[in-house]
Amino acid sequence: MSRKFVLTIVLILFLLPFVSWYYLNSGLEWRKKAQEVMNGTKPFPSGEFVSINDRKITSDSLTDHVSLVSFLPCGEDVKGQMGVIDEIYNQFKETNKASFILLDSCITPAATYPDLTRKNWFILPCPDSLPLFQSLNMDWPEGKTFALVDRKGVIRSYYAINTMDEKRILVEHMSLLLPRERQEKVELKRGDKK
Image (cartoon, rainbow, N blue to C red; front, side, top):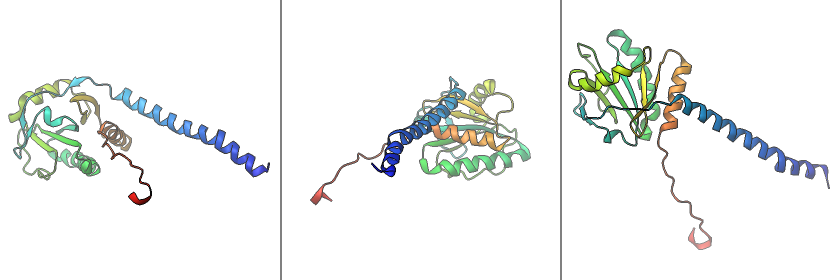
């Protein structure tokens, strides 16, 4: 046997399976760590709430959607936070499986809101949704900007967005919770069926 043949056999039988195992195992460990961080069990408050653009939001409308919830800050701070929300929205808008719930708790509502025609985009004013605001605000951790709600309506974790790493972790966790689209059944076509 030639040296190339033996080297090829060794690569195929030993090195390739080891590299594959290492790659899959590291992905599994990363996913386990992410799931440990997203360990919240508090359900999103139930009820029917109406957004500024007259869209109704209920527990049923959040089913099969991952929702990003945030209190809108009053004043100049809104621009930075809305910039992050816009980036995340643009990243996930094609999936149609991400909802954005923005809670406007300012005494004087903002004169202008972001584009209200966006799909799965809800801005709730405080006076109209007071029970929701009180329920969420009671357990909201200090210094956290966003809450991530899974497809079953459970608040999984809270996030700050002070650094790029924190933003990256939020996007990673959101993508982990997104429902996967079922792919078409693969069919083998032979000969004249092509």
